[in-house]
Image (cartoon, rainbow, N blue to C red):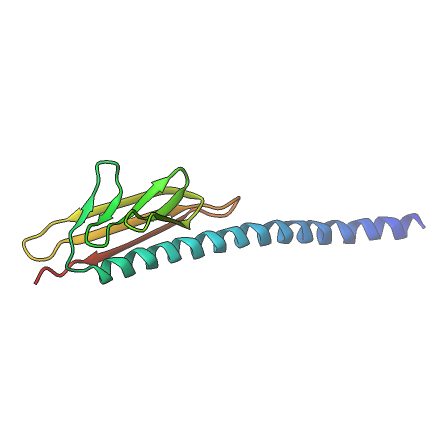
Length: 140
């Protein structure tokens, strides 16, 4: 009887450790995927609006907000969320949550300016996601 219990303990200990670590990793990866999905959605939304208002006046406010003047769209980080505001329609949409950082930079060149966008997000115990993209504004 004692031999059977000892063999059972020796076999079940690694199996239970494997189950526990797999269970933990499942939730970490799930949080990482959700954060990546939200960051990609936010980036796609911003780039779509930039393309839609390509000939417009794109600015960065002193607070670091991205402002698309003709449509009066404003993208800002409020707490840990990126919000898309449309003052003319009095609307506000949260396009990404659990944001650690949101940076926008406009690099002016002799030809067409380049808008560089960076979103850093992390959900729960998931890995940190850092997403960068750029859009060249056509002036001609």
